[in-house]
Image 1 (tube, one colour):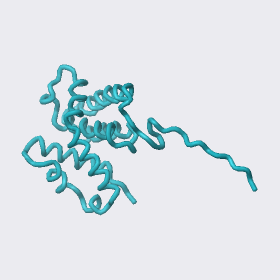
Image 2 (spheres, rainbow, N blue to C red):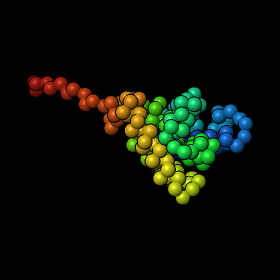
Image 3 (cartoon, one colour):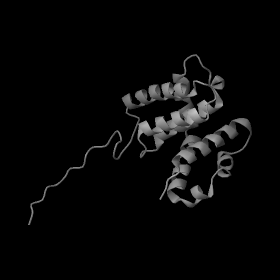
Image 4 (spheres, one colour):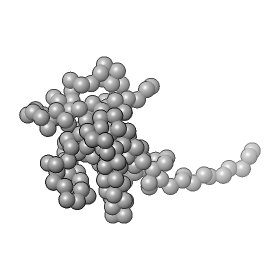
Length: 163
């Protein structure tokens, strides 16, 4: 079964952009962007709903992290696309336990390259996310479990005697 995580991230980015430009709720802004393939894939919809809810429910906290790491920049001066890419990536870092941090950061950089609001968007996104990730990791706020993730510890293998 194919997953559509990149497409979902891009759709959520478009929804967040819509929210910046007009009054609507996030579900309405995102819902009309979903493709039939995403709508029919339970895993894709699970990821979509988790990421969307994480951004919606934790936007103030996420914005505080961004503001704390964008020295001399008021949030209103950060390009809308870049700000929303940062929000999305931070929501993944903080609330999507099954996604490795490097994947979240790399996806954000690639999306910034695709939707670049400036010629330096991807570098800006990379620098801010790297700084925030290092802080979150130091503070123990990144909770990831599973293969290739931060808190993964190899399972103990029990040796058995052949019969």
